[in-house]
Image (cartoon, rainbow, N blue to C red; front, side, top):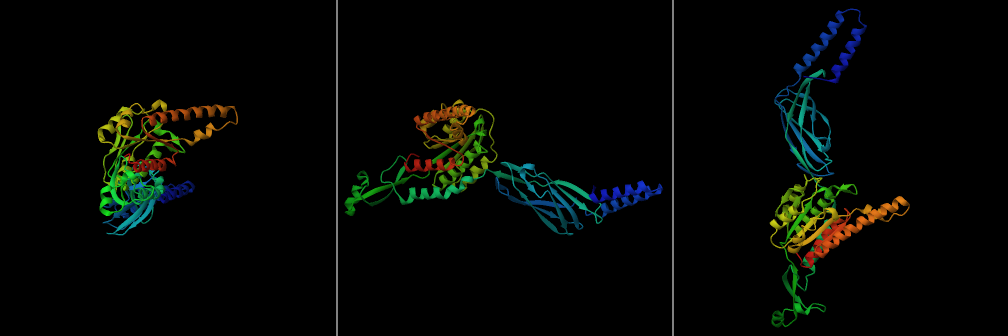
Length: 426
């Protein structure tokens, strides 16, 4: 049984009447009438135990967007009038909190709920509470029941705006402009007439003799290359830059690279680890690679512990035995550098390192207004020099290093990937 605000109001009015009355019989009359009305309302309210509930709607939503969930109530009993409360975790951003509902006898009603999650991961529905109110509106019947449903909040894809431009560069690289000289990762494409400026070493002399015109071989970047993206989820990935953790910026870059590499015909793998392996996606189908990688990253959170470089390097070497492109997302921090462990990775594979730079460090390094800012500038300059030293050591190993602010990192890494692909180094 559940009482409404109307019952509380009548009880308050009855208490005032009793307080001003001179006869004790008034107490019995007022209480009797109120109890009788409440009991009658409960008896006349539609039963709630026979109701059947089901859910439908979205199961995936990107952070910052809104998902719609539909709750369907099937009523085999008497006509129901009341309220419904669909409980979700506070971070799910469920609206509205309560809904009025009317379901005819033998009919059904559908209620819509919007979710705007505030954090990544799974939002799991709690209980649905249905209150059936009697005709007097004083009391009714109430029941809470679990109707399972989960909505996964995916990482936002802010760099999606760069994808059309990168795909245009890819088409130019792969279709319109064929290389005259082959690179390490190039394959023969076609023959065309020689034009001034072409490399004479690319002339196909046999075809030239048959056609009686000078022909050159053209090459294009090989397809079906393998891209292994490695996310360092250790403590440095928890540092906030421009209001977001470094891990979130790395995830954005992973999505852009995955979408671009899939369209380029390459295979994409994802490994995320710190001291333990957090997630792993190996060779998903190209048409669903972005969805698979994004779904796997949804529940990742930075771990406040030092990353195990040996674990990350050995995992890469175990799963990638043939030469491929390894994209490592980590911080260029001298105290936690993965450089010693990734020496073997750089020797066997093409290594591309992506790091999130903090633009506030450059601003701090340029400040000279007072004594405090001078000390701050000195600390910022030292930190920047340490990052440059670590980046220089990686470059000497043969790696390509991209150290850019969060908003620029995805685009810069995509450009580095296209440059490597165009040079035939994949």
